[in-house]
Every structure is written in C-alpha cells, then in structure tokens.
Amino acid sequence: MGTIDDVARAIARVLSPEFERRLRSELAGRDREWLIDELVRLTLSRHGFEDLDRDAAATALLREQRVARVRGLALDHAGVEQFVVRNTGESREHLIEEGYLRDDVPDKGTALLHPAHRTARGEERLTHAKDVLFALLFGDDSTGTRLERVQQELLTMAVPRAKAEALDFMRASTELAAEGTWQDPDSVSNDERADNVLLEVQFGETADELVGRAIVCALSLINNLEINEQVLYARMINVEESTLIP
Image 1 (spheres, rainbow, N blue to C red):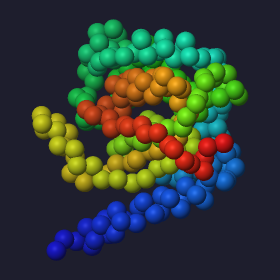
Image 2 (image 1 turned 120 degrees about the vertical axis):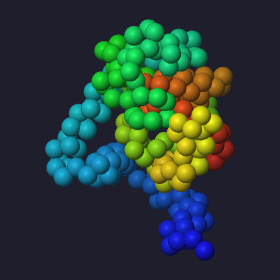
Image 3 (image 1 turned 90 degrees about the vertical axis):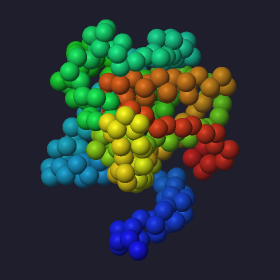
Image 4 (image 1 turned 45 degrees about the horizontal axis):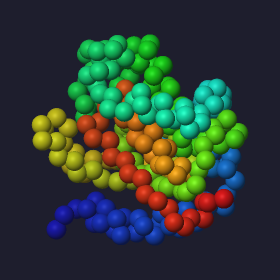
C-alpha cells in the first residue's frame, strides 16, 4: 500500500507538468531583474541564511564580478570554437595529471569537490568554465557576447540537490524537484529516490549548433572539477514556440 509520502509523490508527478506550464506562463512577462532578485532570495533561503540582506549584497557582488569577467571574454564564434577544441574529451585523470585536481579527490558519484580538492590552476579553470557557460546561456550585447543565435533551445539538467550550489550562478532558470533512480554498476553511488533538482534554461543556438557543443564541454568541466557525478544528466531540445522568445 505504501506510505503517505508515496501517495504525495504520485500526485506531484501528475500535477508537475501543469504546474510548470502555469508557472512559466506567469513568469514569462515579469521583469528580468525581479526574476534575478527572486532567484537569489530563494537560493539564500534554501541554504538557511538568516542575514538575507547581507548575503544578497554579497551575491549581487559576485554576479557583478562574473558579468565583468564575461565582458572580458568578448566571446564570439571563434572563441567558442577554441573552447570546444581545448576541452572536448577532458577527463578526470587528465585534470589530475595536469595539476588541476589534487590526487586525493573523492570518488566520482560521492561528495561535491571543494576548493581544497583543486589547485589554484584548477580553481581558475573552473571559474573560466562557469563564465563561458554563463555567456553561452545568457550572453548578449550587454556582456560583449557576439553570437549569431538563430533558434531557441531548452537545456535541462538533473543535479543532486546537495550539489545544486555549484550551478547557483545560472540566473533565469526554472528549478523543479525530481527523484533519481540511478543504479551504478560499480555500486559506488546508487540513487534510490534521490533528492534531485531539475534545472531548465532556454538559450539561443547558432546555425551550426556550436553553442550546444560548448555547453556540453563546459558542463563536463564543471562536473569533473566540482559537481563530481559519475553521470551528469543534461539534454537540449529545440523550442518551436515559447512565450520567452523576444
């Protein structure tokens, strides 16, 4: 017969699509800065911070610093191609060999990697990967990002809730609760009804789908350097119609 929690989860699974549709419709017309402020507030609240004013100010400063770095990248088509060439196929083993990660990092599928697990070079590369991902998803003329985006796509990622902080810089994303059922063949990190978060972000893609390939490279780097999952689920689908298209 199961428990009340089982019943509640079953109902939530049925209602989730309609809830998401109505939430998207309601938020589509809201002011962008208001959305950013609300995402910051909810993130701080989720982590149990008491002094929200102080932490909101700190978060705003970090956001300003990231935007400044993204402007410095001046990312264009050639720059994205270089990023893809450099980072395609990057592995955990190679990051250790090249001195980006220390030798004693936790096994994949276990704990989130912290600064102590990375060298200074690794910390810089992680920051760069996040900056590039930010530019790929949200970059426009205001951040000096010059990409000829011709279509809209939707990126969906599944991240353990305990590790979602690694992607908390991804403003203007939709966050949904989800349960994981990953079965690790090596029995390192089996997930049975794991508490996961689905992150959805709509972004502009180029005609040759370069942005999507670069997003995969950036997420792979972030996973190897911080999130530390054996399999980081992400998919991209074309969006034919959306109220978010300008």
